[in-house]
Length: 313
Figure 1 (cartoon, one colour):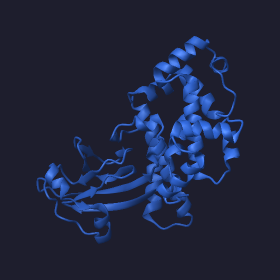
Figure 2 (cartoon, helix red, strand yellow; figure 1 turned 90 degrees about the horizontal axis):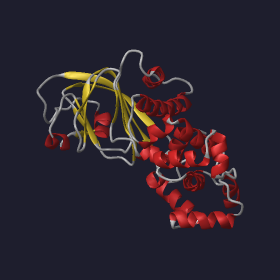
Figure 3 (cartoon, helix red, strand yellow; figure 1 turned 90 degrees about the vertical axis):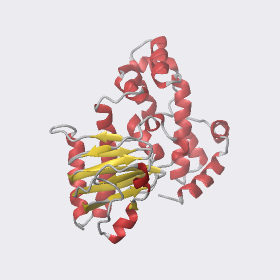
């Protein structure tokens, strides 16, 4: 596994969902704050995204936007003020009625857009810092020749949602997972600022992260990790700590226990098996470390995670 894949896997639960919709006339639809991540892709036309507490964003044909923290927002044919946005028709209600509604604001312009709207279920009890560092709104404007993988995933997803085809129940969730990966890749390729884009762009730190994530149960030491990345121990410790915010072995402990929490949430594996998979020799050592980090025993964490996620697969 690589860092981006692990960061997504650590928080993703259940199955993502999406709709392909056509909205015409004057319209204004609200998407309430969500304990997950939302996204929109404009297949045709244009519209405006108005995040709660943020600046309006104009979306044109081919644009994609990710709201990784589930920020509440409005999608409308034109900018509206905060009071008008608060009166917007809930999106789920619009989907049921499938009729244009008057916008509670705007300049009277009539327009339309065809969009993919969807969301990912996320467990925010243990978010990887790469995901936590994402801005409230990740806007990926369409440019000819840019992000070809993202464009291909959008095209395939749009076609699958436009018609009921055999195998769609498998194809659509898989394409939605690809879409999330490609949006994150595109965000980093667009020159994203922050600790984690910098860390993944640094060959030493990225190499160390790749080694730790590829085999977290290995008996890693700073010396062994330095040899793996081809630098001295002080160089590795300095660069890793500067970019990640914690020393290599402290990050490894954090990641082992985060991975263990994911396994407790998503699998029925016994504690002994999970302990071995994340590098602990005995269930007792694992349970002690887990309780110190989470303030709760592994068994109790599993019970509460099942209740919190509704037993999502």
